[in-house]
Length: 459
Picture (tube, rainbow, N blue to C red):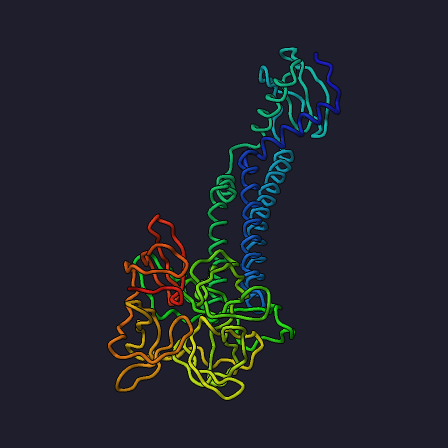
């Protein structure tokens, strides 16, 4: 007979009950481990997506609250439901063990099948079979034939527990399916979709486009989508910036906005041509381009009476908007002089005088987009802002204002495929796409880049 202590017999029997009961009511250990990994990674992903939405909706407390509540609720469901199902299955396993132990049953020798005298359920120790003289071990309500090898004893304990538990019920199959890692991987995807839908819903409630409006090669959008955009102060001016007078909102490809220049409070007309949230790549009206933060974009609201700053060749001077035709402005200087200028020459402070909500759009008459002769056979783009019998008043995209004879004006044709010369480039380039004043160009060597109407000319 093996010299096994009573404490060891009791531990072996309890381990057998636990293994058999969990095998019946719970998925295998590796499956549960994979389930835990899927759930934890899913919750971490939800948290990351929620944090990204928090950046996108910076400054809009109600949208942040909606996304936060949705994120927390989905994370709690993703963690709580499988944990609750696991606890319920484990409780059923324990209840099944207690019920099996409490059922009365005929005690027989596991070796010869001879009937044995029943003993107390909590009896522990060795006993002999009177029929075959075999040494038996009893613990935890189980009875097995003795064996020197612990591994074989463990298998015999489990076989005895299986016999005491009886036929397997149908609930375990349902529990295993409910705790399947594949099922909860799908639940993670559904939760991410629900969180994205929540973000889209609260974003769409403030007038955001349903999708980014990309401009592929060969696409032309002369009048860009006027979206509402966000901006924030910057500080390259002598006076500190006050509260912004224009609304703020996310950026979308194709949106025209007042984008922040440098680190001060000044913004210039720009077009968003690429997104890497929370940043946007913009092309300014003067041809420069840069990455800016979403909150550094102001809505392109320019109305009559607004205060702007116009470049006069030496410095920027404060002026008042008297008239507007698209990006071209007629401004009045401090001394009362009026002149036309283009978006490449004017900028605004974030706190400049402006009636919030006014000047988001400006009608551009049909045929106003023109090209005018500025030298021997050289044409530059601009906007016709006035006319008389012998010609047109053109606000050039480079900021100049001039009267041009009718014979020296032609309709603007800067669509994809047109060859242009760019200020500062040694060779001509082809226009591959256009978004408002922004032109995507391809050089003779295949190099790609962005420029603006203010820097191009055509023979």
